[in-house]
Amino acid sequence: MGVLKTKESKYAQVDVTVVLPALNEVDIIEQTVNKISQTLGNYGYTYEIIVAEDGSTDGTDKKVDELTHIYSYVRHMHSEKRLGRGKALKNSFKQSNGNVLIYMDVDLATNLKYLNQLIRAVTVENYSLATGSRMLFQSKVERSVTRKLVSKTYNFMVRLLLKSVIKDHQCGFKAFQREILLSLLDEVNAAHWFWDTELFVRAQRKGYKIKEIPVEWKSMRKTKVNLFKDSLDMGWQVIILWLHLNFQF
Image 1 (cartoon, rainbow, N blue to C red):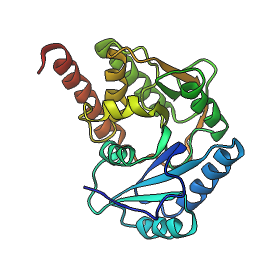
Image 2 (image 1 turned 90 degrees about the horizontal axis):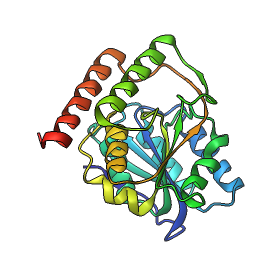
Image 3 (image 1 turned 30 degrees about the vertical axis):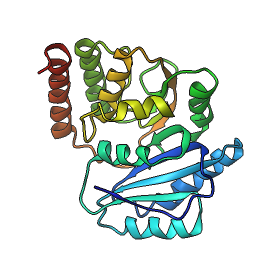
Image 4 (image 1 turned 180 degrees about the vertical axis):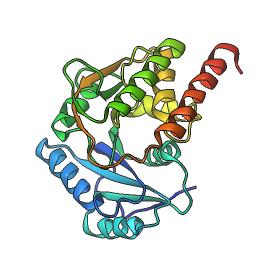
């Protein structure tokens, strides 16, 4: 179980919480925090940034601890052992202070110019959840042909078996109304990459409104996803969830 290491937050409650799941990100974490902070500040939001640092071995934990002493809005969720992205996000969201809860990939593959649109989808347009989508016609995406094919196949499988209407379940750029996300967290069993998909499938089954936003997305580095192993694992989890939802398997 992760232990939250944090200075006392400047705000008892803030407009926005951004959670960054991080594994061995010492080279980019400070730059990412600064870019997000500048973007949110430009829009006039009060905010906190929680780094869900998940068993890093490259000094990311020490770097984030330094940031918590420099910036009052940075908080650190540290786990000595790897929990998986889903569990790390769940732990962080449960200890968040934001009215709008967001998570995004630490490499900022999705252009931050869409961040205010993401937030306004749940604050102004009253969607329960919102997500960036790389699968919409207006989206501009730069990634390998192999990754595109795997992603399209996976999302088709989710829509077919789990009756989801979402085109892109795995884009790391999502926002949630606080109370709705907190009500869903304990229903989601997935601990790692499948977390997004299970969360959105369960949300749809409860009738929550979801908005997909076309984005500009560019692969900023070599992916940490093992396309063969993780794709097989996620495909199997789709089947398990289908069995559970339909037959209480």
